[in-house]
Length: 239
Image (cartoon, rainbow, N blue to C red; front, top):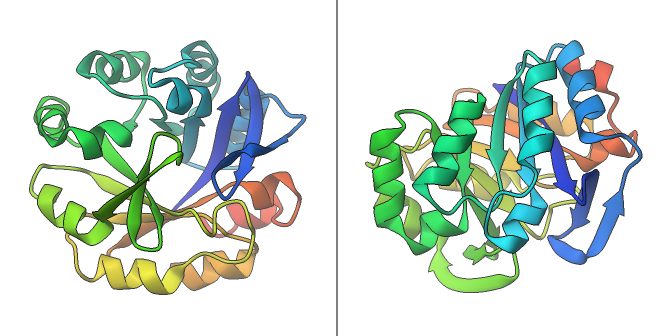
């Protein structure tokens, strides 16, 4: 199982949102590149980065920062936020990103998603931000009536490499991930899922690791690291 330490970037800084609310932002002291170096030196093979400015503006914004991170670390980089076009994807991949995570564009334009999957084999992931079983878009500002399971079933033969599944009600709360709903979803679809949102302790990670025989590929950990609830060294022991 892959453990993805997370870096969310806004205004050039590491941040976390509470339940996806851009009015409830916590800024952290470490710069994105210094945080990425910590993760890489601790042995994490993958880092999950979200360009929150990009998610809000509908286009990549923090590419210079991410480019510096790629230069400085050996870890694979998974990037999301504001990716709306084939050119956006191509630019990230040429920069050296391992996986490009499409969000809003993948839901609103399934034809674009299919083209991207065909053109960039095994490079495209889809981020689904979910509240009460329904998908939210545009940096969580727009709630839809689209069922997450119906949507995944529509795209599961496209060649999507993984789904990053975020429960908005859990994200940034440190109240534990929504394991039950994620496991139920993973049993109904073919695309591997990565759990995001709510991880509060090493014990949460251990519970998810016990699901290694399921269709759950990994877990993303963010706010609990920044707040010191999970030590990077303790998390690294679970890699």
